[in-house]
Length: 402
Image (cartoon, rainbow, N blue to C red; front, side):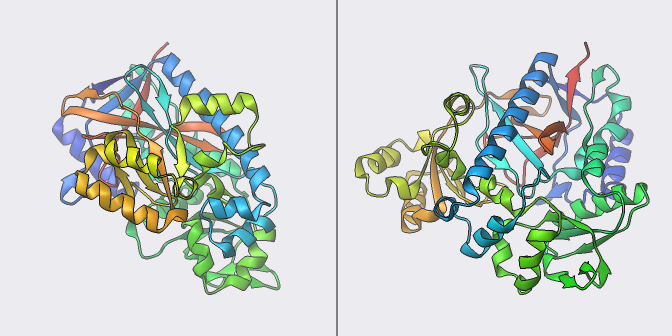
């Protein structure tokens, strides 16, 4: 893996940025007053690309098996931190392959790929992946692009009838994802409606949103919030009869605690358990080790070796890396986690190999998108520290030509 600059003049970069913002609705290209784009790309070798595709699709297959085993087990769903009201709805959902996910891979100094969480619930990056090939391929003619996101997403949705695009309406960064999907549906002549899950209603004809009949939905609204909705009766019917991408069952693998759950007897077979040990860091639910004082003494004293994560934190929120905070901050984070042990996990920290860019040393996360279990393209980011948040910088991913 290496970096490469775009073959682009300043005025061309400015034109690209305008098209990304206004043609593909990337409204948060500036975060806290700083541009979060680099005129550079990640370059994977063909072998690295094949590795990531293989890891991604095998992980997806394993995770679907875990979901099937756990979705009817209330005790397991509670261990994952899923609210009781949502647990009941997950139990009512039919088996569906519908999935839109992103797994972020980090390269370690010894050349291994590691994944430390799964973006199975509301994975972002639609704007960038849909725009990358169309806007940047002329500046990267010597490389190979992989971009099946748009066609495969359309194939996954019904091609007749109106689609509800469900999002948290208080967040413009969520709206931009839904608007770009609305444009994609419009390109094939299909109607959609932008709405909150609160707008869904059951009618004698099926389901409606904002007074318009809808045949299916795309959810960009955190699943753990569904238990707070006022229209719970409508959703009790919808989870059983109305297809939605992603179904609430995806909360099982969105939870950070899934990394501890697959060590429980009967959750995965021996071959899959060995594979998961190779690609994922060791993780414990805080509640598992609550009474183990020698364990906590080690975690407190060896903070650089550990990470604290809330089960349903998003975009780096409620993630505390011991090596990036002071001893006092680490002690406070541990105390908070032990006060609410059901909400937190503690995970072993692994080293991430930095990569040199023209802008300086950066730590990359190679994001692999899946639709219905199959790899469809990349959404990668870099940061000056091995910890990605909403401030991370988007970089396209290309592959060495054969």
